[in-house]
Length: 147
Image (cartoon, rainbow, N blue to C red; front, top):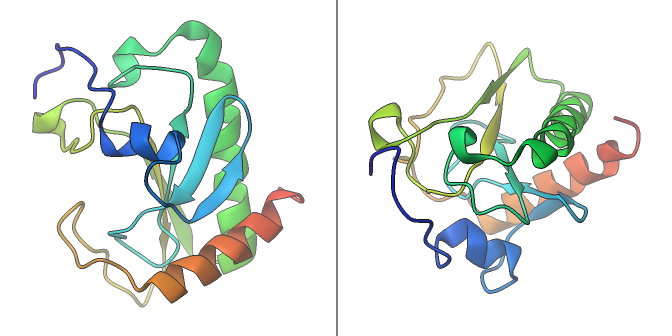
């Protein structure tokens, strides 16, 4: 998919936002939702999406949502660091299929990095164990209040 096109209201993240698909939720308010990536590149990989927006990528995001979204990304990244104590953290966002985007609802990846662990490939790894994701979501969510 190119950078231009129509928003698909049935994309997987839109369905998660509406509660039509389950997710391991970390944080939610009126503007954003943070949840675990089902195909993580590392332990604790999570996603932050704007809820009211139909932006497929950052270029389409409404200016009024930019602040709340970035504040949530920072808050979740701080909670990931506090809860999981990685050696580093990647915060990334893809725009268009050639850039690596696979779900066309704007989203940020928060990917903890551990010195002793290799980073998995984006959207090509194995689906994570549900019990592991639930436990990680709980750990990160408990750290949100202090982040």
